[in-house]
Length: 229
Length: 406
Ligand SMILES: Nc1ncnc2c1ncn2[C@@H]1O[C@H](COP(=O)(O)OP(=O)(O)OP(=O)(O)O)[C@@H](O)[C@H]1O
Ligand SMILES: [Mg+2]
Image: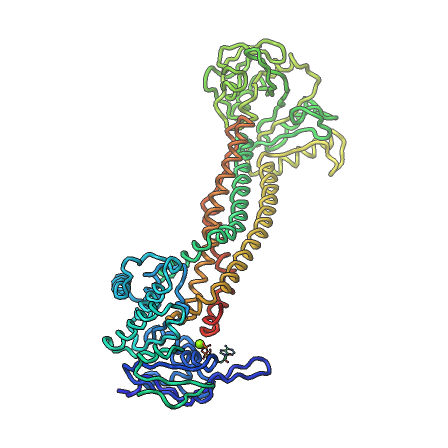
């Protein structure tokens, strides 16, 4: 088995807007072990989200390779990437990104629908995940009927729906007050410690970053050395 | 899986109720127009065919044409048919019987209430039986007329009803026909034809006695021996009349027509009307379809973020396509369903009003299963057809770009 669940090898991402070329990533290198909790820090516009998109198979690099479980996915077609995301990756976003027309439990079940899981199993699993984050009284609520913290907990349940190996969290507490933010952090830590999930989290907050096993700094689309071990 | 997609799509439509309804409006107006107008036209066709239907296919009529200011067909023309013409026609090859028919309009009075009636003559002697079978005359009560039945008449089934005189007429009652007293000796069976159900059957001599004999007839009825030869016999009759009345081909002042022909010409008129309805409805449906497309494009733009989220959690392009495709198909389908219900309502409502106004049971909307299924299918296909492009646009969105949108 591979030592690294994710390996980013000299990845460039260039956006062309008319005459101007924006290099969001300039030769990014990153290796993440199975079961590791990694925090990524860096100033705004440094390429953190772009890097997350590469790791999460949402996008492919302009140059370089991305290995997921030893497989180079940098040349994959969209339909294969979608399948990969659906099975292996769980996303948690700063803006929660729930579907407003669906209830909490339906939101959690959605990745399982896309994976073609039978309805009974879907419901059982979604209920279990929602009660795990303390939302067993909120199954039928729409996102607009939930607080920010509750929405983010639904999003965590959704990220865990298909039991993926990797959880990507792009500023998961950015829209929450510090108290709610720390409960969300506790969930992430628990997932890492108890369920051995690989977690990659983008954050601005030094305090939050301290919960991670390792911190990497991105500046101008590259990793700057000097994280804690 | 598909059922889950349907649920998700319906959720989205329900979430934007007002817009969904407004979009469907375009479809259901078009479908309602098709169903109601075609249904009523078809009903009308059946009804009018029924009016002629009591005449057999082996019968045709000859009438003078030209100026007909008022009154029943064939009367009041400039140059009426001579009353001895029928004998010449009877002499033709292939003709089984030919006889004069007099039609007079007059007033009918009963229970101190007057009504307009149409008196149809029945000839005496051998031809009586022929007319009776030709018109399929049968009484519901009382009896048919016999030779020498002076001052006696038979009434159509419609007069039995209270509507006309405030009180139904039955056999044995006395009524006034244009001022003279007659005894009703029979009531005809119901024909379903309002011309017939409100007519007065009277012996030819009696009618000529009262309304005067000017040596002309309103109509000559001709029965052929073999239906297959009817065209040929009609041509022969036309020849005789042209010679008799001294007119050239193409300048006839008379009409030789079979009920069958009348029905055919009616059918072609109604077909033209229905075609027109189809064209108008098609335009309205295409506009409705473009409405669906517009709504779906708006939905795609508006839900760009949602598309991004779904892709991030594993939705493939085909998944996104299916979700939007179902939505537009559903808009078409439900629009069509409501349109059909609305159309059925309008058609039946209109024919109900028609029945009340004319006091006739004749006007019935006739809506076939084919029309209903066809409309249903068409509106569904319309929805999906106009939904394809927006659904493709949604499916092709790049997940990162979609996620970045507001
Ligand atoms: N789709 C795009 N088109 C053009 N430029 C882009 C696009 N996506 C990102 N960029 C540019 O790439 C750079 C890196 O963006 P990215 O979103 O990765 O930054 P970030 O580190 O996540 O910043 P923040 O902390 O503000 O979220 C920025 O300069 C941004 O403007
Ligand atoms: Mg970012």
